[in-house]
Image (cartoon, rainbow, N blue to C red; front, side, top):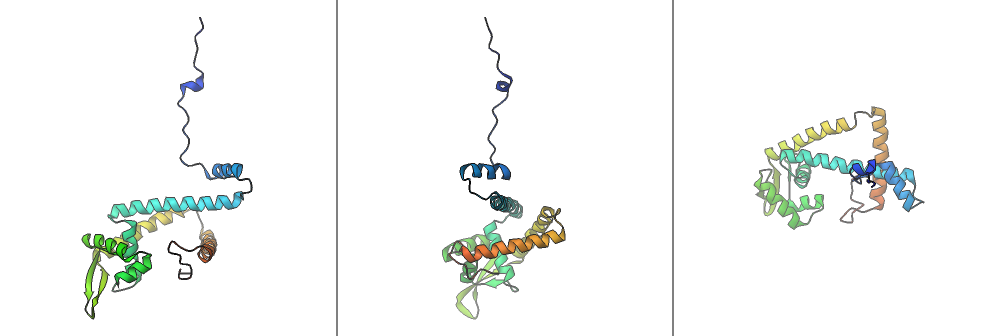
Length: 194
């Protein structure tokens, strides 16, 4: 009588497929299926894509700690960059953020409830409504900027000042190229800031 002994590999659990391949491995898989892909270009694009996604996740985590969403942060930012007294009409806010008036109203309603902004009638034009940043809203925005600055410095800690300047220049050139050739979600290209 023979006994079937399992092979050593059978004793180990099956190897899981990674959720995300390494960049080089992913590029190699692309080349296998699409041999004319430029591996250097694909490596750059895939790396930028992954950096952007991971940064977005990190920023979202920071905003969660502060009790705000990235959508609310965008409204706070628009009000802050408008300058003191940090006031804009809802139509102007919607235009700056690429939102419909209804979506902007919904977002402002949530932010009003959280005390991040106020909504008042313009004293000089009673038809016009003004959205104004509250002290609490400005504090949340400033704290988010402090948290982001720490994260960003850690992210770039191994890159020298000279390398940072070169990287900033290269990325700016790439951004200009895509802004000139690819419209944003609303079809805009010309009105994007340089």
